[in-house]
Amino acid sequence: MLSRLFGRPVRPPRAAILPPGTRLWAIGDIHGRSDLLAELHTMIRADALANPAARRVIVYLGDYVDRGLDTRGVVDAILGPHDDGFERVCLKGNHEGLMLAFLDDHAAAPNWFYNGGLATLASYGVTPRTEAAAMRAAYDVQQSLRAALPPAHLAFYRSLALHHVEGDYLFVHAGVRPGGDLASQDPFDLMWIRDEFLAARGDHGHVVVHGHSINPEAVDAGNRIGIDTGAYFSGVLTCLVLQDDSRALLQTGKGP
Image (cartoon, rainbow, N blue to C red; front, side, top):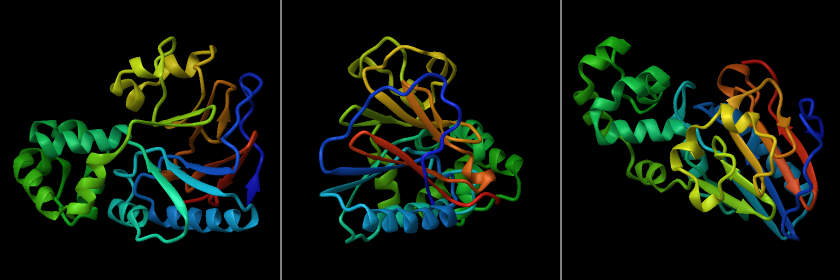
């Protein structure tokens, strides 16, 4: 169902507009929930049929991996093949950063495993019995994952963008460092920032659409719109729908 309801605004929404003829769907953190992504893709296709536009864009805000059970299925769904006329923009989340760090250096295992990496390993058929066992055999686990990853998946993870701009909107995974322009932003902040960004009340030059910070409802705070509704445990995967100066939501049903 298409809804115009957001969590209570922190301040009145900032005026923002997309380029003429563009309808855009931005999808929050998926975290291995391929079932919810399939449901949301169906909703997006129906919305696109009901609202024709010359240009149709889906922006995925990152965190495809970890915690949920089917990271592999999520990436398969995004990679296609597709002949549906949608442009797809895929951003990098902090969890993809953790996974890539582990693939490059097995010493990064604790950070990734602690943050849900074992679920991603299992989705690719790498199944240490416990987190402790995985830690003890981090190098072997790394080598097993390197062997198990389809080349297209590895290329996908390594190709992810850090940000995307459409009209007056900036799409990133986590947020931006207040007070700096886009060119000066640290990639770490774009994937990880939280408190300083969430508390900021100033204009960022764009309305920033982001995930990363979980809320029970999508939040329109005027200078930013947060759409991470904790899909991996809540069952609510949220999509922000933008066209011209309008904003709406598509969401999967509540419950795991």
